[in-house]
Image 1 (cartoon, rainbow over the protein chains, first blue to last red):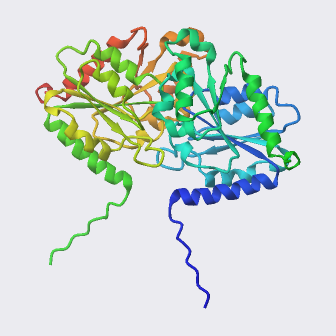
Image 2 (cartoon, chains in turn green, cyan):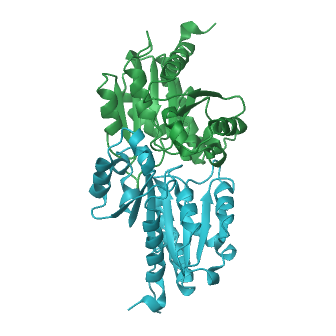
Image 3 (cartoon, each protein chain N blue to C red):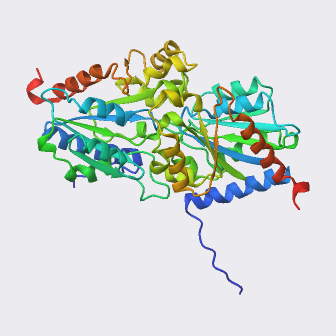
Length: 229
Length: 229
């Protein structure tokens, strides 16, 4: 009799990764590139998306999946820009889950018009710890770090900064009013994730927003089957 | 034969509460009042403590327990003010735990000179979700909310705002440079936690810091056995 041993997948992160891979296969089948966008609460993820989507990258159809503990404040903001958007709430738990996981995203797939978009931005729950631990099926990870949070955040929340392909340093317009050393912040980002791409942005003033728009367009293009060499 | 049924305590939060009560009994036995201080990353908890502890409340001996995923940046800052401080790191987990729990705080008790302090401030990990779910043995809970985070945070993270006896609205000095409606923020705080005390503060300029100092002193005094009527 043929017998094989299969290790029991009992680890929650293993299970999450299994579902994340299934999500990614679904996204790939539809030719949808996926960005997992993370940050601390109030760093400006939604404002940055609003700034970009008011004038979307040319030729790229963008959809958004909003993750929040409660409410639909962010998806309301995005929907007003006539962008396809779905809202995930994590609050069935006691105080709400502090992150999106692959299974939550999977449950949202039927609400997303995957055949009509090229790029899906998943705006995660505002939190610098657990979202970095859970893959959701994304191609790339980006985070927004506001200069108001201080220079030390990369050193205090290293996994988040380390797990991202892009760090958007936001609220640059506030820098003159803060005791924050931008060079020190950039140095600390590079210390925990050497060579990671950093972008200096003010979603409010518009400074640097076009660079993020281009990055989104490149991310979408790189994921298209026809773009593969 | 006498037989009783004891419900098996298998819920993680039940277990946490059991240890939190043990912590609180230890704090009470030493006459130490305990504040659990929470916020999003970079809201200014440590800067607020620095501002208060540079000129501590008269007659109150304060100690601090710092909770961070990694590093000792905050405890170094507090120690430079000659305040007894211990550092808890939550990073033995994969990406680090996103909150303090009662057992972590219990493990720090031997590092704290409880017989030499009247008030312990526990600075939790920067996170607006899970810290609110885990009691650690505190008498009262306070949170710091920076105006830079926007007016909507009470609506998006209601358990945190609801579970606190005090909401310190910080970085008031930045308000002229933001598109944030302070009245709307205060309204939203009150909407999720009606009547909760709110304090307007700029830890950086010093505005409102004395009110927080007095609140700490009153919290310490209220917990002293001799102050009980």
